[in-house]
Image 1 (spheres, helix red, strand yellow):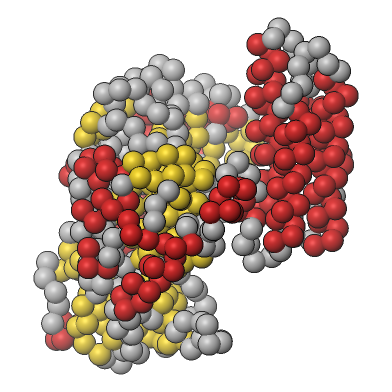
Image 2 (tube, rainbow, N blue to C red):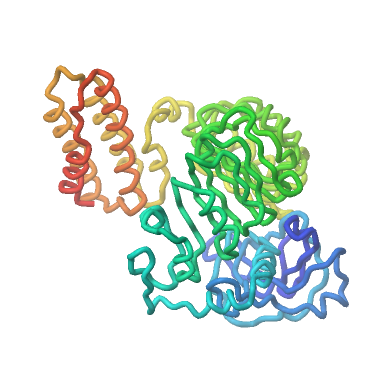
Length: 505
């Protein structure tokens, strides 16, 4: 169903455990035949225990957002005009806002800004006033370092200079802390400061972690040495940067009903969070979906990024009828016959698959075509033939194939540069002239990308970072191998300096 100007929709918000509402204020027609009609969605300042009626809708007003750095504005942006499943049409009334809309959003996300605004209003008014008054034009001294007063993120570079954590009070906008040396004192400080909503934590001295009294929304945890963690009710993301020990216990509000768990490479054995809402797996090489489905039966969102990855038991996803969002990237090992039908996933509102088997893309596009007319956001791209997978299984630049600003020719040249670097370094041992061989290999690798950039200007910030990371991924294991042979012959700082000196991109 396509939205119309003036339509007011209501949907249930799992975070609030209430119904929320929005209104369509404008429609934007596509620029070409392949484009989609967009609808400007205005979030409304309303929540209730039941679906509203027309009379209640006529009294609704736009939500005015003032949380954090937002300055008394509407949450108003363009999304797909296809109404997602679960959104109920309440009434069609004159639009509550007529100003020009310039923002574009990924999805309807009705209720998210209302949650943020309500959480902001729970914070002490004096603290909120200090946050709003902080200015980048003013500097403060913390730990002997001069920082902008509105600094929002700090790490160990500052934390290791402090003898008294109360110095951090000079940063009234502090929201993110990153540390590899977490202490009980730092955790106590975080628990007492409502604006700190993102924490990257690693500790050699804290094995039982309790963030239950914090206002964190994102917790990125290195779980080595951690036996259990107690989460706060407001937390939306728990990201584990390594595999935790067996028996790792997670205690979460409502058993994780509002939580997204993000893990790298594989799904670890976890105790708790039986009603987990969302699961994201990154860097996956192999994944059996049967135990995933059996472990988390209440999932509404599932995202899997392969490396590339091979998935088995894909048909078991049909046992997740509450699923609303499903995303696959670089995932193979399953066929069109394995993928569930639209009838098996009645609540699916978003299905995105990038770099998956060709037959899957063709079948899903046909099977789910009708569902798109009922609000399904369907995106299928980079359909891969078996020959592509065979050629790119170990190619770290495989994602260049299909990027809008990079031609297939230059994607292949990037792959060749990696293969040549690997070939030049994989057999190096301590009996060789390591320094000369690595100098030649790094030089050739860098010049290959110089040539690509001279001819195409395709290397931008993301690509530049990827080229560097691939170089690191080749040199790091080589240094380890030679170290095991009793040699310390890989001068990585010199090689990275050479890379920076030679590169033109």
